[in-house]
Image (tube, rainbow, N blue to C red; front, side, top):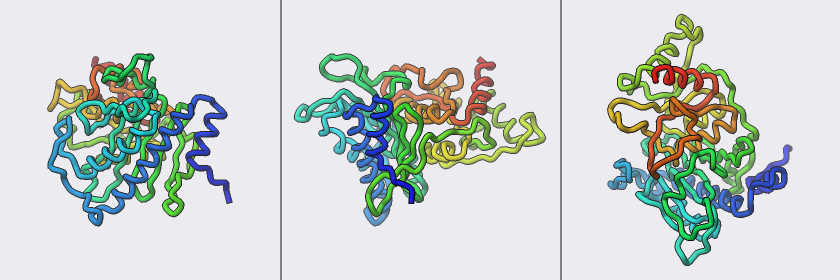
Length: 336
């Protein structure tokens, strides 16, 4: 029987080999992973735990919150605020940052998260997930403000997601490749099940919400039209389309077998560059994809190079297998 490697052992060995996982960061990742186990329990209970349905409130984006959105947000805050490894947190579900209370020691890291991505799928029992990103607080000034969070994605110390599906899995990068852990429910531990995950550069699969096609910019329409034309078209091969409407589920599939995920600009909200949040969704997923040998852009530049100007900034996202992302990005650059 193969030796089972736990999340803790993996992080310790990464620290020994590469020396860039300080004890505080290791503790932070372990606490986030433990919080995800708590969220997984609530997700699994579903109607039995009376956690399904709408909370009849809205988040800062004006989206109706599900009960599990709020529960997951509270779980992550309560799990992380007392450990001494964080200065502050920011969430897709909160208007402003959550500074660690004075009664607890303050650390040097900043945690950002989408507590429950794909919440439209909660009530229909389709895979959903938690996305997180870790930044270092820059400088030695006292206190913490929103400005501390406005760092380019390339500055991330760690990023990952937890997908709540047929198995509960934690996918993580600390800047030395991508590792996948599966939750052993009987033991309550995260077990390494894939390491140094690599994306194929070529793919025949794309993930996009086709119902919005009439609202897209011409380069985006061109790319999808060519994919749909199949073997008879300019691409000379048939493509499959997949769309779960949960970024975690779609990206997990792409990390597992390749593909491209696209959530582009559309003309219904022309002043907004996209729908997905840069800090809570695009940056951590782009970090993971690049660490697995893929590519992530907004159609004109690398997502990890974008310097945010506000906490809830939105962005167009094109990520996945390198050759396809390069192609759709080139189409957008030609148009510009």
